[in-house]
Image (cartoon, rainbow, N blue to C red; front, top):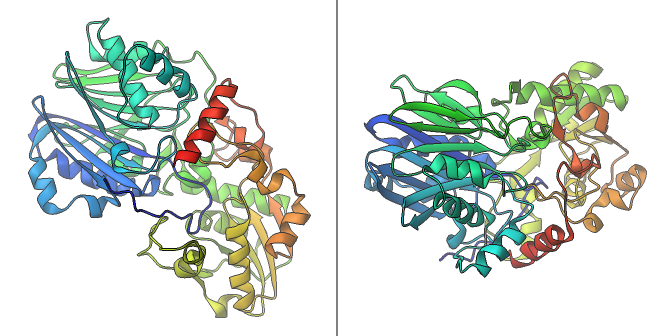
Amino acid sequence: MINNFIHSKAIHHIHEECGVFGVYSPMSMDVASMAYYGLFALQHRGQESAGIVVNDDGLFRDCRGMGLVNEVFSQEKLQALGSGNMVVGHVRYATTGGSNMVNVQPLVINHHKGRMALAHNGNLTNSYALRSQLEEKGSIFHTTTDSEVIAYVIVQERLKCGSIEEAVYRAMERLEGAYCLVISSPAKIIAARDPHGFRPLCMGKTREGAICFASETCALDAVGAEFVRDIAPGEVVTVDAQGIHSQRGHCGKVPKSLCVFEYIYFSRPDSVVDGACVSLARQQAGRFLAMEHPVEADVVIGVPDSGLEAAIGYAAQSGIPYAIGFTKNKYIGRTFIAPSQGQRENGVNIKLNPIAPVVAGKRVVLIDDSIVRGTTCRRIVRQLRHAGAKEIHMRVSAPTFVAPCYYGTDIDSAENLIANHRSVEEIAQMIGADSLGFLTLEHVKQLTGSDTGFCTACFGGGYPTSVTMADRKNRFEEKIHK
């Protein structure tokens, strides 16, 4: 077990979601390499661990480890996985459950009706209650993740019905919260998305006829698969030797609540999420910011990476020139190892460096995607001052955070959110900016052209599901045990 990783929010402040990937091929092929490239494209969704499980006609071979995709999978390890006709892959950022080897996915579960490999993106809100029920009936948990809870619920239902896809369908009646699943049984690949559609999941097809499932379309592009469609909220899709089958009995029972942060921060700019281009949505956020918070300035710059498109949009709307204001060290991920807290706090200086001639003596509009506690943006503003910026007007392409998230986005508890006890003017003074403006909740719902159903709970938009005291207690305990 590797448990000496020290993680830092080096630049960004929102912990990212996990990424899932799966393939069903009509013939045996090098599906492990397909998963490797798919996960590499989803690396931005999780940098703590990665795993691949290859299914070769019912024989499961897996490789999992802590670290980035290219650190976990060497050429020798991929070759050892061998060929197969199915594969499930996962990159993880720890939300529920600690960051250690025992929690690395995909999980491989053995039960008397076969084996199952499961990859999960999201966060259950009733995991505490479900885990308690399962333990009372004798279940022994080997991880601290809610993904294992999902796996055990599916196994319970599998004992009552005739197929794995029916078991997944029935399990969804007991699961609450956010989950996208890619599951391999000995003979099938199953993909499922929770009825609210909190997280994205899409399907593609290669020229060779392999069916792929991925958290984002960029992963389909990486393996040469053509986008077919998004998995609908509440849908269960099964692929086997007889073809593709869909169960939609859970669809449309509740309003869609896609996490709006998929457009603001999580997803890669080149991905298309539920029919909308992420890059264009972020540019729209910048245009809205320019309308809401205009200012006289000389240059617009963005904080890499998710602030760049919003900065382009702000510049286009305002007429203020856009420029690249920072050099980013591409060899440091969103998480990195450091031996002390003081050195971790210097991560922003390691990862970003202002381009002094771009900002020196100028009035700068600085665009970023969010402010949670304020510590990171304060350091960035300080860097710009040191580089000679005359004025710094910060604009944020999201509203203020006022509530914690229970669906997988690691928004801190309410008392630690800077906007909960400070005005915008006080926050500006705290971070050292001359002015500060946040995107309004009304406009964040319009990033894709219309409000097609977003979860905006962390911005005060209300929780789409009931959140009990047990959920709140469970989340608090999870954060303690990380």
